Image (cartoon, rainbow, N blue to C red; front, side, top):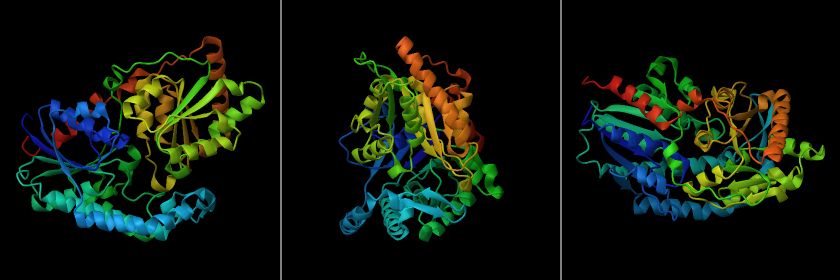
Length: 456
């Protein structure tokens, strides 16, 4: 396979300071080390915060940066200027996002784009046009890259979809691998008036791509039966090298520190069950309210959602905002904490398949993890990973009665252990952890690619 060429098209790549950039950068690095000629076609972003760890991983890899046309930028800018005041009037009203799901008859929390489907649909269409414009600009940069052996396009972000569709039509000999981080048609995020567009895009990918890789088994199962033989599960993961050289500061206070790093999706990520159990333990005099703190790293607006969830249980004063951190600083915060929090959501309607990438990144911190999984899914993949890996505690809303008791006992035990020893023991199942190491994941992907090679 030495000398084989692969073009990777994606919206996020090093040094973008987001979890979405990690997967593609790690994959590109691994293929580069295996002798592939890797070329990246990625959206150029301008941000003061860069991920220096990913930037190091991308050394030696050719990257072609793409920007929107002036016309495309002006249209998006004008749209935002018109819509921002309209959206701001509604955005902070979280109560108006709790609506009845006609399929289940139950009240559920919906993100902004689904709670306000007209505005959400307009946003969707403008973003679709922006991504198409981005892909159109990329075509001008593709001269000399038609002799690729493989085309690896990443979704989310429709840039990869449009590039894949264009190149595959032009050159059928290129093996097209369509990679999915998030479902194209998403139950909680795709507004109803444009859902047909997303479904058509899904059907096109299932039919035309030579191979589909997805971050979870659940997403693979969304592929229609006719084409499911093309689908392979290639999860996100962790890289222990990312934590090398990170200095862990000595603890000053004697508080049990819980840390959450990442987004809140406007409140769809919901830690209420966690805060509720902490409140119960405080009221029962098991936990001293002055001996616990909840650290949050991310956007200020997301922190306000996090703090609002804690406030329902009179715990807002225990919340600490750490700011918008670089990934290196975020990894350091995780290592300086005692328990890592992750929130997710999964719904039976969509077969399931949500495995939050942040939970897998946590694996290399060697800290207990508490996962709160909301939605009606009965057996989520994330909960299975947490339990089989002995990584901590998983709470599933669908099993609220039993899982609340389990979470209560887990928190009670960890607090007593911390007060008694000043630290927490953590003994994960190394065999389970190994499956989420990016070197292991890279080997799996390489096996898939080699099985597709028509020249073998």
